[in-house]
Image 1 (cartoon, rainbow, N blue to C red):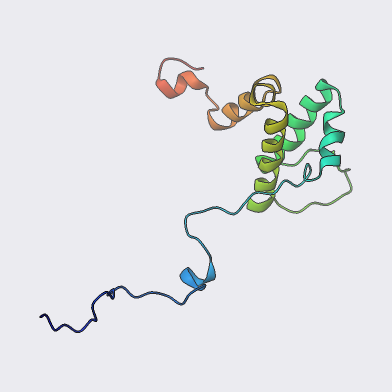
Image 2: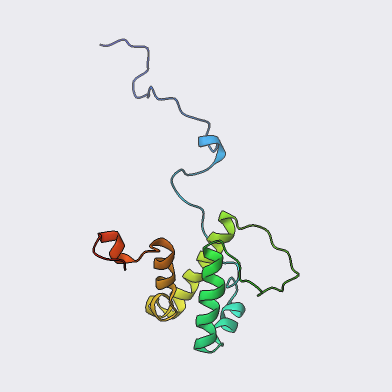
Length: 138
C-alpha cells in the first residue's frame, strides 16, 4: 500500500472558488452574445423590411455596415447632434443587426446584392485581391 500526502481520488491541481473561476468572468474562451441595436424588435425589423429594396440596400451599406466598421453615417442623425466614439460593444451590436438581416433576407441578398461583401473586401484589401497573391493591382 502506498502512503502519500494526497488522499486517493484527489487532484493536486489548485481550484478556484465555485462561481468565481477566473475572477468572476464566467466561461473563458467564449464571446458574449451579440444583441442587435436597431433591429432588436420585430416591429423595427418589419419597418426595415417594408422599405423598398433600394432603400434597404442604401440603409444596409451606408448605416449598418458603417456602424460595424466603427464609422458613423455622416448626417443621418443630424449635423448638430453630437455622438460618442465607437466602442467594441456598439460595433458588435451593429454586426448583430447585419446578422439579423442575413437571417431574414439571406446571405446572397445582403452580402452580394446589397454590396456588403464588396465593401468589406475594400476595407480589408485596399489594393484588391490580386495584390494579395502578387499577380496584379486588383
